[in-house]
Image (tube, rainbow, N blue to C red):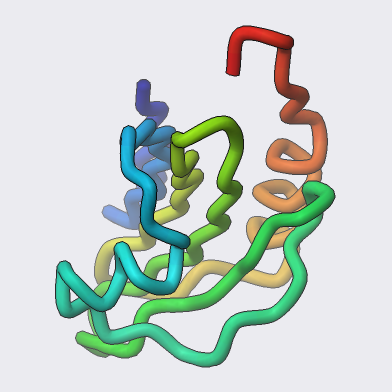
Length: 106
């Protein structure tokens, strides 16, 4: 599932939700993909981890990972050139992420 927002200045923000069935922890899964990310910190969902990409200056991602019942839920915000996302956009992303709840099936 994804959502996109394109501003008049060409700035694009995408929010993705990916579900991965795996017995690995989020850290193990990220290592297998060779993602370049920063340090992990507690995320806005109970038992979640949050980190940022450390790649291109024209592309930045914020990741929130939650492991639940054999699945990793990756909620991701990507910002595309020409600017970085603002503190307000990050606050909105964290507010959206904090509303995620898990039903008994997941």
